[in-house]
Image 1 (cartoon, rainbow, N blue to C red):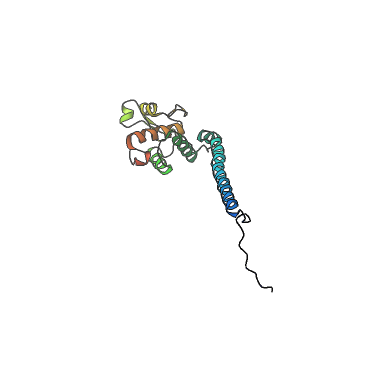
Image 2: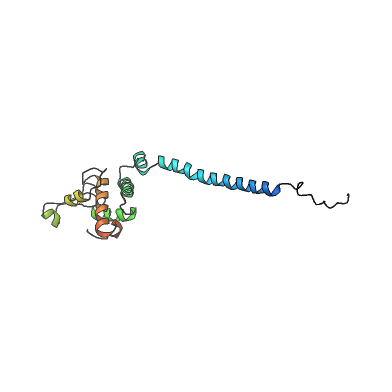
Length: 168
């Protein structure tokens, strides 16, 4: 193997512009990274804007059963800032109507006053009218409208349907 000869120092004019190239390369790398970072949120925002909550609700088909009614109601509640969990809604429905959207209470104090409790969450007509959420059916027997109105009422009175553990 040949002996290695130490490199001779170069004059300033002969020095490679390594420092400038490196700085330029770093600047481009940072700028390139910055562009990529900036582009990703813009691309993501475009995709996210296309899937707005209203569009997702319209595109989602919910089954016509208790599970579907609760899930559809929760989607509407989320759009209107009404709190409540699946478990809290389900627990109250089971206590109030056993899941029968046509349930009506003809024997309690509300019924004695002429305003029987109706639907899944046993809402009386004045409460349904006061807490009805636009975009849902104006019918206390409509399962989704009943859930959303009752949860809206419970949020106003108790903070959330999740805080209701008895007749309300």
